[in-house]
Length: 180
Image (tube, rainbow, N blue to C red; front, side, top):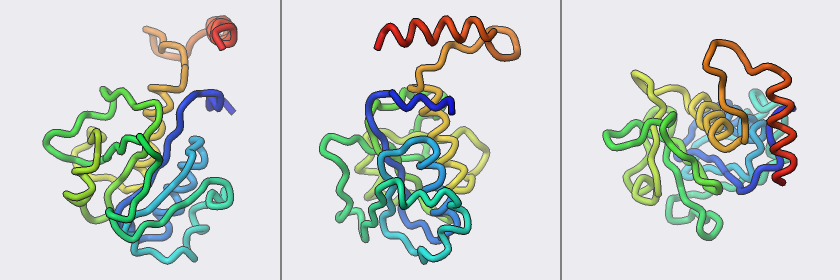
């Protein structure tokens, strides 16, 4: 496993108004795979019994899961910035966004957008630079992958196509170990 589990900070990911258990299953599986500290839903309209159709990792047995009935009921850790993932006029393109060390990400429903009330709570709003909306579980995966690239402590990519030479990666890892 190459995911840097020694990183600092925490993150959670959730969805407002999610209606399909399979999408929630894919989001929670993705959260589990990327090392999320928690997952959550706000105003969800799903039936949990279908969640394991897509969540074969049984993420809810490993990652705390919170269900809030409304935006007003939502309780994040004290000082936890909320990062909305939504296509809006003023949202920041995800590839140019510096992820907070600790935060919670909130995605909109399958056939809609984050509510204005939820967007007002967001410290940041980012968008995945696509021509149109994509599936909520894919948006979760892309957001968490971008977080991993941004904060995961990986060496810079080489200038030429391809990956870094193994010796370069090993030297970088040794320097990284000495810093911790």
